[in-house]
Image (spheres, rainbow, N blue to C red):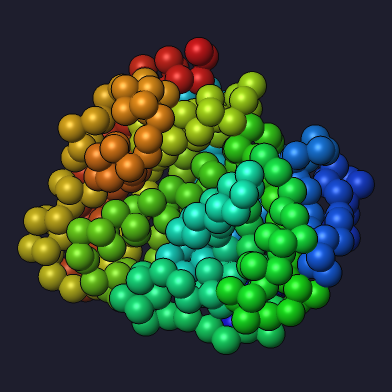
Amino acid sequence: MQLNRLALQASQSLFDSTELLRVERHRIGGACVLDCGIHVPGSVEAGRLLSLVALADLGRVELVPGSADVAAGPSVQVTTDHPVAGCMASQYAGWEIREGDFFAMGSGPMRAAANREKIFEDIGYAEKANCAVGVLETRMLPTVQIVKSLAAACHVKPADLVLLVAPTASQAGTFQVVARSVETALHKLYELGFDLDRIESGWGLAPLPPVAPDDLAAIGRTNDAILYGGQVTLWIRGDDSSLEEIGPQIPSCSSADHGETFAGIFARYDHDFYKIDPHLFSPALVRLVNLDSGHSFTFGECLPDVLRSSFED
């Protein structure tokens, strides 16, 4: 399974319909860079396709009717039968890219090509790729030097690097962040030391918030969408007792910081992500279905009042 090749094929829909999707193609330092919301409007469909690329096309991403009991408006639904490869080896934004004034959170299968993070050793997955495809959550287009650095890290030529770029406060950027409901559940389980090989499939749903006026506000709304409105089901193999034991530790309510809008939490910690309890970053509600025993277990709950405060602020 070549994640970068799958992602490259998935990105073709974006490159073939730049005018319809309101995105713009650039050639920077030899790399193909697609602006999905910095100097162009972008679109909801661009966000859906961006999310698929981040998942290396190992699943389905759809905009579906939301639940009025949780939040008004549509929701982003994600389904995958390859959750570890799609979510952890590709979609997880585990690459912090800093160089000069440039900052971005990097996701997509270029991470597997670079193999810079400890997580790849733990999940036993990395790849030697002929091309590298990445998604950058940032407010700036990458420079020639950034392209050279990323290509070198991924062991490819700049001409074989594809970067899809969107700020959080854009239609595409907001969508692709909210499409991470399953990924956040898997990452939480990874942090808790759970054997991810036991997870066969995943489904997630999270409300799509209004696009915020700036990136800081957008970070708050997109986090709240998952922390207080995200619902995830994981199909797992093995014994029931381990699921009953770890289940209460998975949802966001396991954190002492739970219950306040993310913007409020972020401000309280002087806008330093690393001061926030890492156990907060997970869906509001998680359902574990044991494929061996036929039993299921549900943990956590959605908090529509917090979502309302976040989305209407």
